[in-house]
Length: 230
Image 1 (cartoon, rainbow, N blue to C red):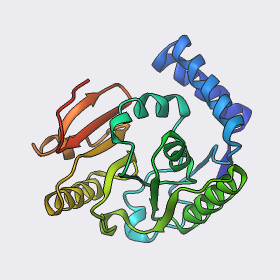
Image 2 (cartoon, rainbow, N blue to C red):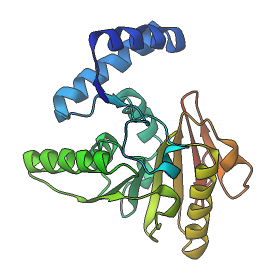
Image 3 (tube, rainbow, N blue to C red):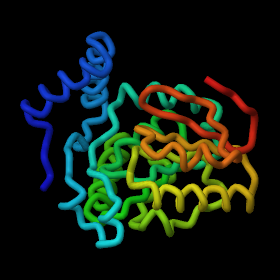
């Protein structure tokens, strides 16, 4: 069942955020949610249970619910990615309704790819991006891929990966292995943004993934290039 952000949900989220982040940061989070909501006009502010999504049985065992990443957090994350914008490709693994892909393209990424194991969310993301770029009048190179992330082929120009705790440890380890294989096949600077890094040990037990940013809500790992820590 898809749940829009009701008043009760918003009030609950407000108090949870105040306990976690404090009043000032929570106010910023809600401000940017409203500001980008007006700017983009996207219909991505909803929650959907993993049990209700159309995952196959194997994926459903480790899948998490869909909820969009808030814009305040995205602003903080993308401040670390300024040097990655250019010829590379931004990949959102567990792209949901497509919010982050639009934010990434708005920040300057010329190619964005969304991957999701839910056909319904892929269809929603496709509609979201189609409508947004038609209204904007510009269209970057983008595509939405319906796939199990464990078996998603990583092309040689994929450089930035975004994951908002999309699944459990075992699938995360398979995705990390796929990224490593792609890097070894075609060495280039790569970044992995891991929000709500529940299974951070998957990356941190492999010396190839350098932890360069460690914040309360996210971590960024890098392969190749300069080692910039924060």
